[in-house]
Length: 304
Image (cartoon, rainbow, N blue to C red; front, top):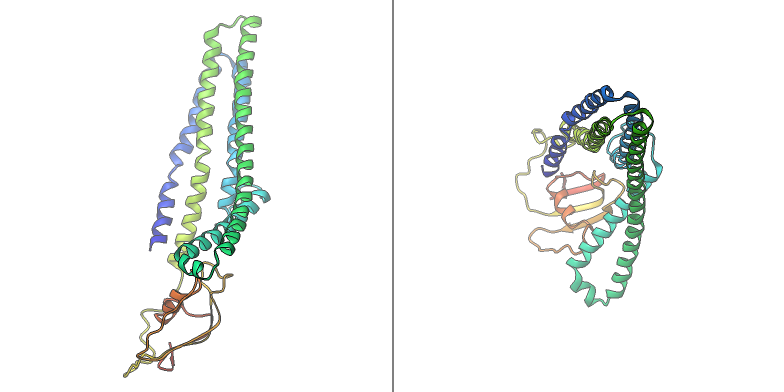
């Protein structure tokens, strides 16, 4: 339920259509107003400012592209570097986070078996991988921001230089030049701000796809199905025989690989293991929140 609520929030956060309409309209009106003052200066300044806006748009392409892993949206060419970086960092962060949780929850067990050095070595290995991935992210972000700012300030300089040239050579006054520069500059800035909505649109589209996929999914376990065996006398013998199971969200990560367990009625048993080893998964299979890929889950010898 929490996951579905998060997807709805992502959809609501994508309400950026008003900004997408407002920004180009503002740029058009301001450009028309400045064109009445001086068409030549307007063309020069518009060319430079639009380059800055386009660069800002391209600078956000990598974050948009990383969201396309949720759902293929063929609006931009593939960015192999960004895709690889996102995949590597996500994979390493997941492993690193799981290791930290397991270590902190079972630190007494680690210390009792003299495993501190081994745990620290493994932790440092994960940290180095995440660190290298973070360096890649920083380089990509720095390159995008640097190119945008370089074009932006270059356009300011060119606009002022061309305006002074018009004043000296063609007799225009300073008011006309400043009017053109400020009009186009403000319009281009609004267009650049609109590019931020690209990520919001990607999040909303991806969230909508996942949400409707959840809504339209037909569960393998039909809770309204009344067919089946009703046990008259339940003793409570629980048995798992050669169970193979992985969660739907991570099908490549096998939790149980031929796992077997037998708990006779009236006995108490403790399941001990690292985080993610499948302790709570046993309970989920017995309560039939999930079905195993293979094997049997038996109650009093009856496969449920």
